[in-house]
Image 1 (spheres, helix red, strand yellow):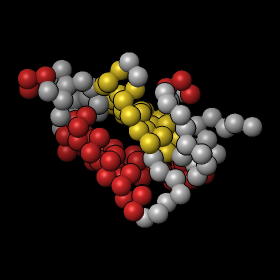
Image 2 (tube, helix red, strand yellow):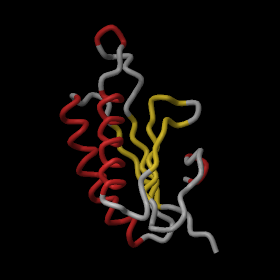
Image 3 (cartoon, helix red, strand yellow):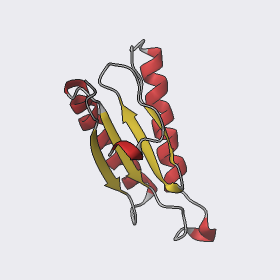
Length: 116
């Protein structure tokens, strides 16, 4: 029997880059604990926006959050974890990053939004 993932969302609109990254770090730590006990893992949708309100319409939060997620994934790999987070831009909406935190079982397939 397939267990659906738990779904969580965080909206970073209006936050500075530092505040946004800090909120994602805190939420990731909490959701990693939830993923360990939830059989379907966790889907974490991070609304980063498209940078339309940034200077010259160049996104600043999205690249910083993507770097953070890459760092987290790299640390998990170096520590030899059997599972790793996966993430990518939501299909059709590049202002949302979807993160899958597995429960220790097989990973989740993209697109994740269809599961929530």
